Image (cartoon, rainbow, N blue to C red; front, top):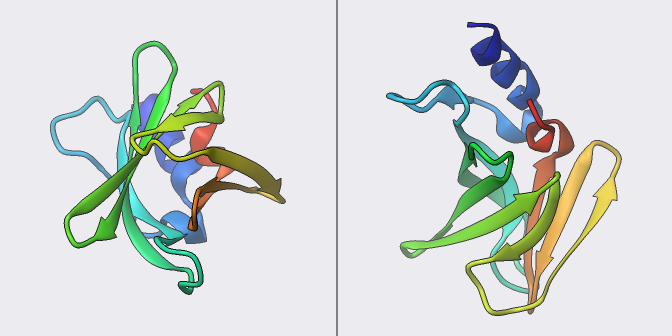
Length: 118
């Protein structure tokens, strides 16, 4: 129960509003929305996202980009290492947000608290 409460507390932020535990899990995963832009020049919008915590401590954030496309971003120790795109990935920290860039123009704003180890 503590773990579920902690996961909810970590994920409670304006960027992941309407967070809910994924049914049938142990409370490690969450559903919500994050600000994102799928193409260069697109305005940032609210994108559906799923945060999946793995037993090895790594995290996958799956973001619905529209048109049936999903971008998976793979984190290790709270840092994005790769994605399911072959394009270059980079990131920066802006206050309490981790901003992930995938060339040529994808942008994802993820609360750092959501990426913290539990």
